[in-house]
Amino acid sequence: MTTAVSVHTARSAESPADAAGCTVVTSDEGVPLVTGERVEYANFDYAASAPCLTPVAEALSAALPYYASVHRGAGHHSQVSTDAYERARRSVARFVGVRAQPADAVVFVRGTTDALNLLARSVPEGCTVVVFESEHHASLLPWEHPAARAGRVVRLPLPASPEDAVEAARAALRGAPEGPRLLCVTAASNVTGEIWPVEELVRAAHAEGARVVVDAAQYVPHLPFSLEETGADYVALSAHKLYAPFGSGVLAGRADWLREAAPYLSGGGATRLVGEHDVVWNDLPARHEAGSPNVLGAVALAAACDTLAPATQELLHVRESALLERLRAGLTAVDGVTELTLWGGDHPRVGIVSFTVDGLPADLLAAALSAEYGIGVRDGLFCAHPLTRHLLPRGHGQAVRASLGVGTTREHVDRLVGAVAELVARGPRWEYADCDGRLAPVPDPARVL
Image 1 (cartoon, rainbow, N blue to C red):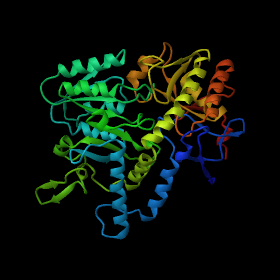
Image 2 (cartoon, helix red, strand yellow):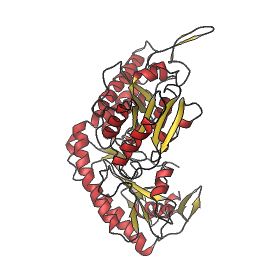
Image 3 (cartoon, one colour):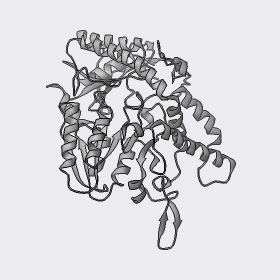
Image 4 (cartoon, rainbow, N blue to C red):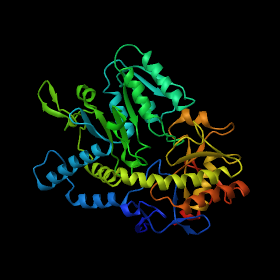
């Protein structure tokens, strides 16, 4: 049995960015609760995957009638799709402040994880890679993969302050063997939302003759980022964090290492000529985009980039900062709530709050928020196990993460704070049991057809 779902655009209440058309596509039917009621969904899981922006949905609708393979077809639709794909590359280049080409390149990939695995296979043989243990797994793990070309990986412990981060990176790069060196760092933590000192890290790394790749997956949905302005050598990002579905992402930055490396994948599109005994590979970006490109993913990402121009992002950040302050203050006032933070509550951050509640396991809290209040959060270690485990209070094995975005409203924030306070005061009103590895209501009237 299927149910037709109508959709509407959710406009952010009291949003100064409304005039920019920054709205998200969402269902107007609400979500079912175990009590039998339906309520508007309060989405606090933007840091995992953000909903689709309305202009992105419109761009996809316009592109779908012409969808075809790119770069290889003489037909009209193929030519239209090829033009859309390459225009998307230019939009992304503007969005991340790519420097003059061919010095820099923009390579479409599947997401940040894919982008950093591509770079790990493209660094010069024997490269020293320096990375903090606070990184997301996407930027922590690729360098030690068997296929990676790094000769030495230096994992730095969690820094006590931004200044310590800069000094630790400087010391590690200075002490590395002669040869190519790369510092990998996040722009904003996916666990705490705290913003890292990217420009200072870039200056320190460059002073030691090293390059820098920035994981900007959690940063660019909230604030502008520019390769040219920060001086960073590479940036990686994911479309699904940036209000664009269809599984695209980007690695952008200096072309030389990428141009000299063997293709990330072998196959059509990466090749210029295939003979009986040899292969001539294409130049960038095709060299690392083997197979049929994800043209709709590129179109979606470009539409998001064009919508989230710097002026719009600045407006959204002002509004989001007010909502974030309201959420953090509300949670702090609830007995037993502890916010996870690396550098203290006053450090600048994007719209992410991770917290624990004494006496309520994270998975139970998340399940109850969803089933009893229609609130979506994330629980666990957030694919950043070393950092999250380090920050957890004694007695807690996981945390809950609430992340904000374009569709978040003051009512959503107040509902989350009120729900946590009620759950602390009287506990869940329903029974929960393990169901395929996650806690779920038992019975669950909302799932009965």
